[in-house]
Image (cartoon, rainbow, N blue to C red; front, top):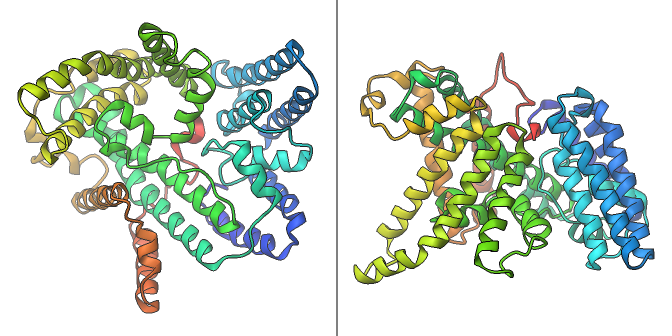
Length: 467
């Protein structure tokens, strides 16, 4: 039962209705039951691993709160090591018994809980059922956002009353997530899969377009999931953290990472980069820490060498950016470049986007030689493929390609509005009754009619579920 399945669209209203009928002090029990059922529907064999993570980190939190000195460190290390071992077996051993859905996400939440208790940021949770709900909460258990106990546990203890505006806002965010996933991501994936399946047949311009489309595919797939999850939680009365903030409009790789998979980026910053020393131990150590963090981030996604290279590339991008900063400042001063000007910002976005495309190749292609071939030939210009009908022969006809382009333009417009602090959902909800409902119905009709449905549709096909 994925978030895009018909079963989920039946499941959520039932859970939400019961959530607001049940007395507040018992709601967490109902949500825990719903969450366990949801997870079991996706991966029944993963339940023992989920339970182990919950029990081991719950007990570790209690013991850390009670002990002093080095004993606390030993307990923390043991809890982290035990869970990381299972995570490593899941990703790198090839044993299906450890291939558990969402393991990276719920384990990172549980590990951060233990570290926060150790640091004294939060007290250990005494109610094991509320803690179990934090780790297994069904909207975000399989693909995030990677939440923090300090945000979620207080909400479970004091749930909100039913709020019509919150529910509508959550449903609108879910609709946007479905648009991103079903209209853009799944449609872009058809072209991406066709081109990446035969790298040497589509060098140059076609590869650049495919890498660009893969960026939009993974953004709309994962960002779509995040919007559905956040909106779903809001329908139930809970607030999950924002996970994406117009990442492709960033003017640097560092800026991109501040706005892409924010919950993971902030997790690595708080629980790996800063403990390694952050920027407190000199410039060279700072650069080394950045590279270590991004290589680990690559390996978090998968065991292949291409994932490690993807992470290394992003680390090097940032280090080189820091090294060249004085040069860029000097050139801008000499040529009197207006850094706030539209043309300069657009150039920075274009350069950042091109660098991202090189990285996407290594993220998408598991065969190292094919990835290198595509990256080397990425910027060879063959503009004819844009006009000779090549892209209409890769699984999508002309109307579908045009629809994809229009949908991406709508996405970019929405992201620009977001950067301008324009809340589109609030704007819609502030309209008159007839206009609001016209927008709601139109959005649903567009998603249903333009989404990639029908024979062969894989409702479990969220990209980040595999991580």
